[in-house]
Image 1 (cartoon, rainbow, N blue to C red):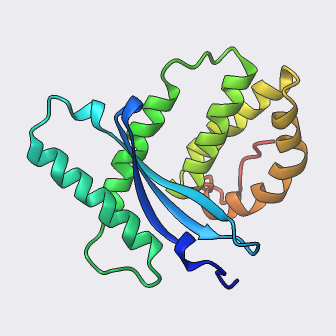
Image 2: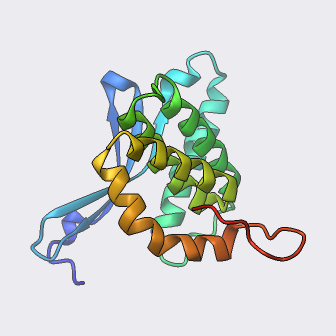
Length: 178
């Protein structure tokens, strides 16, 4: 794809005053020249109100460099930020989970989506299992997206996930999840 308007492309960092949050966005231009944004990271200053300013500066610098590293073909070569991403992901997952009512099908589905994405990235079979269980709970309450995921999407991706992530039992065979 050729970007028709190069002024639309790049990495953008915005600040949401109401949430005290810095947002890193990768912007590309669509074929019709409109902007398409993909959020890469969020940094909430509210969690760092009591922190030493050096900690905030270091963490924020790592976040910006991570975003640039991921968005640049071949990377920038400044460093390895995977531990930062893991730390941020765990914090975001905990923050996302706070306040959810896991007896509610919408909250079950929302958490399942987040867990499934994290599981694939973090290569965690246990998290895949937890996400699938939440999809099933939500679908049992007739949540349409959860039902569609279990019927249409999961059968397509599960064999590959099992191959890549699922531990083998002592006899070398898999246990069946669905």
